[in-house]
Amino acid sequence: MMIRVITSFLIFFSFLYASDKDLKLFDKIIIVVNGQPVLQSELDMAMQWFGINNKKEAAKKLIDQILVAQEAEKLGIRVDPKEIDDAILRIAKANKLESVEQFKNKLIEQELSFTEFKDLIKRELLIRRYIQIHLRRVLFGGIKEGKQVKTRKVRIIFLSTSNKDFKEKYDYLLKNLNADNFPELAKKYSDDPITAEKGGLLGEVQKGDLIPKLDQQIWKKKIREIFEVPVKNGVYFVIVEAEKEKVLNQDLSGEEIAQRLKNEYQIQLNKLREKAIIEYLDKSLE
Image 1 (cartoon, rainbow, N blue to C red):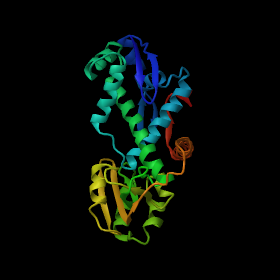
Image 2 (cartoon, rainbow, N blue to C red):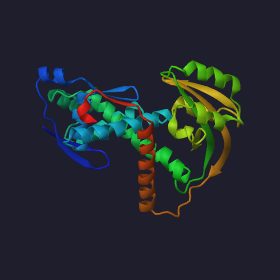
Image 3 (cartoon, rainbow, N blue to C red):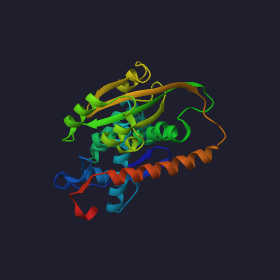
Image 4 (cartoon, rainbow, N blue to C red):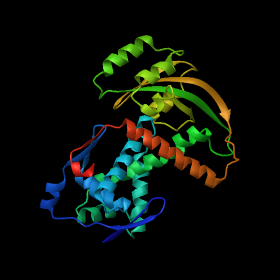
């Protein structure tokens, strides 16, 4: 069956896979991206999703997707499971299927992993939210055009529990961090390269922009109060520097905004590539 996929545009693709025996032989870890393993089957699916026949080019595209999705999650951007299911349902209906379950069965018939497909869709949605929330905030203040809303200016220091020096850095910050030295210590100790180089500046956020754990505390705490937010893969030190109401300037045209977002996305992606730790277990993909 030929499957048609809709993201922001319609993509046509078909899946050609080997037997179960062959799949078991090929489904191995081929790349590790910042500690996250990538399987051969994920690359095969990415080739079809991106419409790229060259494995090396597809691997590069997949790595970029993973890097931006990782960064989005570090920034506290979330994608609800229902959003993923809704996106897959739209894809299913574009293929004349009436439910996610029917679409899942079609993937299984073609010996494809539904879990990996959901992961791919999740990354695509995270990237979209990264652009809509984070990059818009970086370039334009992140505020919806024409609407006056309350925002809070936030700085973060993210410490990853996967780093061997986590406890040492955590104990030091717990003892020494204050409102005045927060930007300096963010540059020195934060494990998030994008916000670290800006002194931990996350930008101006609205209610609902971030994951619930961060969002609730950011709008609960007092201005210039430092607090911790533990998450699955680490801990955030957070400070709210200011609160205000703001309206986004509407002088730019839609095309100008889109181009500036595209340029900023490439700048941030290049920075993520420079900071990334990528191990190619399949040397042919380097």
